Image (cartoon, rainbow, N blue to C red; front, side):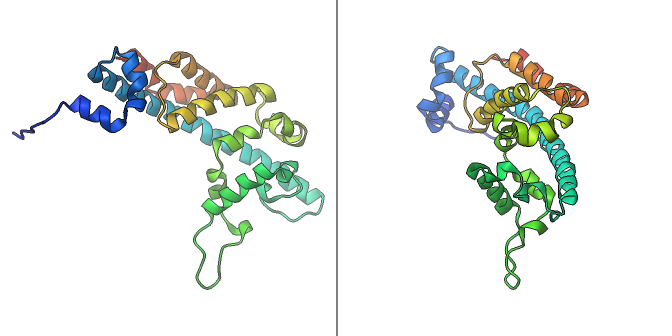
Length: 233
């Protein structure tokens, strides 16, 4: 049998390594008991991972739905106006391309998707970079911004409202914002144990169902969030 000698309490050392500021909310919730705080910290990680799984499904489905809708719409516009056929994110006729922050999103996604430059031929031209790779590099915040009031007439009315028939633009933008905020908290390893996580989980599933009923069913049937909520220390 392996015998491990611990020269100082594990809970004290791990708390020190994680830092007092980081452990502060957990210690406060557990009456300053380190072992209990570490259990709560571990549970916070587990439930965050479980939420991230559902958010993953929603984010990928959302971006693919937007990409498909914009691809078909922009291609038709390009053909009818005799414009070059390029991916929607490279079509400078789209009004959102005139916004500096959006152009930065596009540039960053292209940079991340573009393979390393060939020593002989140089960098791959933007139109030749795989559209699937570029789409996968856009952030959740970028997709959320598609439904802002600024894009109502240029994107929502002519195109995206048909891709999300069970949603109004403002409601979809608001629902995605709440999920985006939770996603960012989890991604930055922030505490979420004090939130009404059952309500946030129901909101996630309901949003997915309005995007596509089968998506909501899949997230709910494969999620561990409800199980973990019942096991909160």
